[in-house]
Length: 292
Length: 266
Ligand SMILES: Nc1ncnc2c1ncn2[C@@H]1O[C@H](COP(=O)(O)OP(=O)(O)OP(=O)(O)O)[C@@H](O)[C@H]1O
Ligand SMILES: [Mg+2]
Image 1 (cartoon, rainbow over the protein chains, first blue to last red):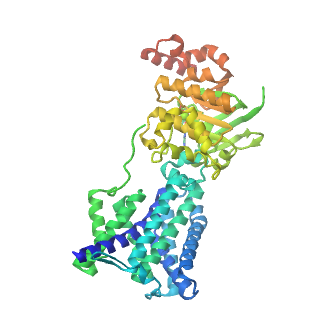
Image 2 (cartoon, chains in turn red, green):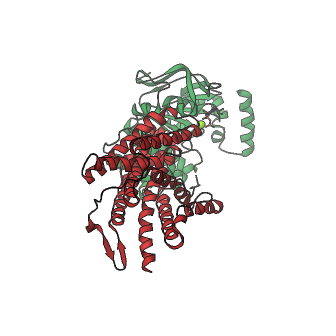
Image 3 (spheres, rainbow over the protein chains, first blue to last red):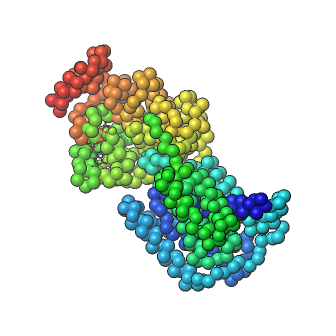
């Protein structure tokens, strides 16, 4: 029983990260219908930039974390401005191929600078973060993950529900023509969605790096996990992405714990295929409101 | 003629480089007036509005000839982000709410031309014109009735403080009483805010009641213009656009007949 609860907690923590990272992916898709195949590489890039800032740069951890997020936010803007914007109006397949190209480019860049080995962050989480809830022991990494994830979720909720920019972003995803007719700067919304997506990808990259170590192949493969997550959650639902992430996280940890660690990376894809056969729009895909 | 806010000089519009829809349309809109644009399906009314608002561009349409002068500036083929910021807001045909946003969030999108500025008073203003929206403000727009949605999209446009408001068939698919209510409010907005309004309508009867001046469009051309009184008295307009209302009895058989006769007239 204790083992079960332990796996449950770990699974939810990792799953939240998958969910948040998938949320970035969904955001780009909702705003501009682009599938970003460079998502995993952005994740890895974040983890490596953070690594360099704290080991080579000797910058305090909190500052390095914020600096990395800010840098990735900017990077997202730049990617949209220089690579995607010229393709607005072109066939979607070109844009998607472009993201595949970007993925290769980022991966090459990371291999060039940091190599393909496994790096680890120095121990910096204070042991005071560990928690003992009855029989469940929560290691510092997992409680940190939990805290960061919940803070992000709350911030995003507020951003999309309360702030004007957040509402404009949702309006573009909802009805682009109507948004244009009211003067919403649609290209700016695309750029912002890339910036935010890059930022949350980097955030997940850093935290996953703390949990599993930093390796370009592993991290970019985790980026691929957004596919089972968003398929599960529905490509167009941000809330669904979070739930999908948690389900995949749980599946993975339970498979790893009870069956075999070597199966844990396969199971999400098996689930993906099964779900696609039963519910092609995902479990939590938006139910189209039809009236008028 | 008084102070001209908007002038279209002989504009042609072509979609996808080949499909010519407007063939030399000229019209002018006096500041503070309501101008109606009447015409049958496919006449080019919506295209005319899109040429003005810049929304042709995303549909691969282009003003190939003539010019559009607004506040003494040439605005043809400018981007919609730019034109909306000059005070021209088009309310699209068929309502087009943001379905997954609440009524109030929909209204807030109307502030996109001046992000970060206060908007609370404007919300109050919209709720004052459309009290029916108040109790629905937390409801998703996708679940609102057609009448509520029409009020919503007009209200959403008002949030942008338009100088020129262009309404595309606001009466479409609404019950007669709701149509009357909407037109009463349109007139009120025009009188109280001095907002200049271009009104595209199939419901010529209602449009001519509120408008000061009107144009009739067929096949991408303006075929007739005049004050609302002149148009209402014109025998052709009476026949083809007011037919049902003038005779007072709307028989479906008569509809068919007058449609045939209009075809001959064109
Ligand atoms: N994006 C487009 N590409 C090609 N042709 C178009 C496009 N939009 C409209 N048209 C054509 O232009 C003509 C005029 O269309 P428009 O929508 O302006 O008419 P309308 O007067 O608004 O008609 P309705 O009363 O039915 O709304 C139609 O024949 C239509 O098929
Ligand atoms: Mg039309």
